[in-house]
Every structure is written in C-alpha cells, then in structure tokens.
Image (cartoon, rainbow, N blue to C red; front, side, top):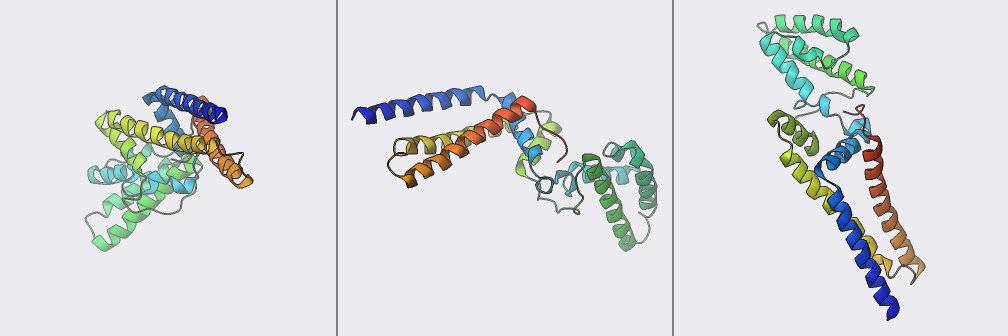
Length: 216
C-alpha cells in the first residue's frame, strides 16, 4: 500500500514538472522549436519552395505579369542571375504568342528557377509539386509573414506542442508503476520513456543550437 502511495506521489510530481515545462515553452521558444524541427527534416519532405503555391513560383508569376525579373533574383545566387535573366526575357517575349508554346516555356522557366534556388540550399531538385502539397505549418508561417502577425501561428503551435508533450508524459506516467511487474511491461515502459525523453531532448537541442536553412 505504501509503495502504491509512493508511486502516486511520484506521478503527481512528474505531472507538476511537465506542467511547469509547458509554461516554459513560451511562444518565442515554440517558434524556434517548430521551425528548427522542420529544417532538420530530410529535404524531400520539405520541398516548400518547389510547390506551385510556394513563394518562389508566386514571385515568378508576379515577375512575368509585371516584366520585372528582379522579383525572382533574390531566390538565387549572383552567379546564377544571368541564366535566369536570359530565360526570363525569352519567356516574357513569348507571352503574346502561341499559348501552347508559352506554357511549355513558362514551365521550363519555373523549373529552372526552382532548381537553381534548391542548389543554393544544397538540396536536390525533384520536380515541381502541385499546389496544396505544402505542409500546413509552412502555410501558416507564410500567412503570418504576409499578415505581419504571428499570433495565430504561435497559438496553434503552443497548443500542439503542449498536447504532444502531455500525451507522451501521460503514457510514461501510466506505465511507471507497473514497469517492474514483468519484462513485457518493462519494455513497454522503456519504449514510452525513450520516446518521451528523446522528444524533450530534441526540443532542448534545437532551442540550444538553432535550426538551419538547407531544407526550406
């Protein structure tokens, strides 16, 4: 009976600690964690800039509409500019011609622009992606920049991270009291514990060291 009471007490202590931790994950830290985590993922899962609703292609369409190639040069390196400027001029000059030919040339321009941009990131080019394939977190991040307000994004990230931490903690806490009853229960506890602690370590490491740009 005394052992059970001690276990309950320990579980309550752990819950108190995780509650305190969730309070420490303030908006600014949460932003750092999420964006850092996204940038640590493999390149193929974060091809934000190669989708039709990504910022590179959006700027490309604006450039072609206004005949202003400067709108896309920020996405590439200086030594890539000449290739894009030349291709842009050829593409723009065909706008009033045969539409079928223009669509082919326009797509080639978009593909070249995105490919060169991916090169500056050290990421592979795997083709243009359809609109709607961008991860929701990235859509929200772009919306925050466009509206000049991060409140909605931070609120949703805060709620999501707290939900994840609490779920992982609750699983570990529920298994803690029975982890020594059998090898099977012990292994189940260890799996949950490793997942829980590694998640928190990942958050800490990203906040400590920051994220990168290579996978964007």
